[in-house]
Amino acid sequence: MLYVLAGDDEYNILSELSRIKTDLDISDESLQNNLVNIRPENITLEVVRQHTHTLPFMGGNLLVVVEGFFSAAKNNEFDEWSLLVDELLGLPITNHVVLYEVIQSGKSLSANKLYKKIKALTKSPAEEQQVVFFKQYNIPKPTLFGSIEKQTEWARAFISDYTKSNDFDIAHDAAIELAVRVGNEPLTLISELEKLSTYSKANPITKQSVLLLTPAEADENPFTIMDTIVEGTPRKALYLVRQMLEQNEENPFVLQTRITNQIRRMLIACEAMESGSNSKESQLNLRGAFPAMKPFPLKTLTKQSRNTSSEKCKAALRLLAEHDKSTKTGEIKKIGPRAPEINLELLVLKLARLFQI
Image: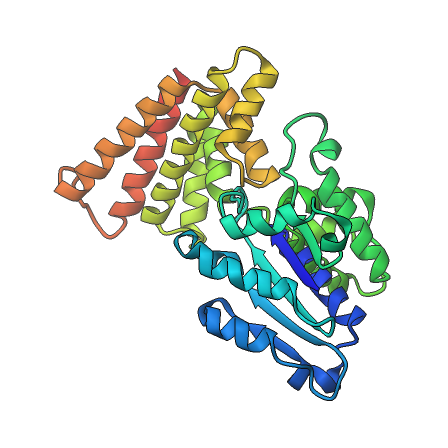
């Protein structure tokens, strides 16, 4: 039997692989001899052919798991790899092969000739379908439409299923908060749920626990500062910058870079929304511009971008570029040991006043 498992949902791909091992009765005692794992860096025609054509040790089933098969098999060598696929389809009933590939979100294997060849077999006569198990596992992209509950529907369903199957509870508002902070990322959700369950002991996971233990996003500080800059409130912006610098949360140069990156994202978001003829089209354009962004930063970016324009973002980027050039060329005097902090504070004040206009 030939199994093909592909997509960006690594959790469900690995879960399916575990199920296959159970169904084939690949027990712990037989792992050494009847289970072969071929890593991407070891894939060659000879290696795959050698292991898949070996008979099982002491009877039973042989399972050969090939990770990254389609990436290793280049299109310009299609004929040779195609012959190998034909061989895999004709293996003895005791020999089973899993070709699995975890791809990046937004990517596809649709242009891979071998992938298309095997997929076509699922539409062939019944006897051919019996030798091929083909399934794609893709994580749906978070929606921008509707309420927060609608936007986090998939992640909350995953959280609910996982907590039920592992015998612990999570409050409804906690599940929503966790879904917003993590997004549609199963492995990260599992990691956070295990951490929260340990912290909560036998009690249900609360929203307070999620707020305490689960970071919203690595770039949350620039989001917070950008809120005050876009609002045109220089005093608030300056207070936040000074607070972060005094608490040693940020290096001034790193914080400036992260603020610059956020304004670049805002420019892209503004242009995407401005290109839409109506609200729904604008939101679709925004999702298309940031297909892999998690719900929390996307929600924040959307809010910030709606409060400004692409022209103001361009002006802000020009100001940042001029400031960066002046710093590097020595036009901005370095007075005392706090010069980097003071220069950043002045820059933030200028940005807030620019958005205030």
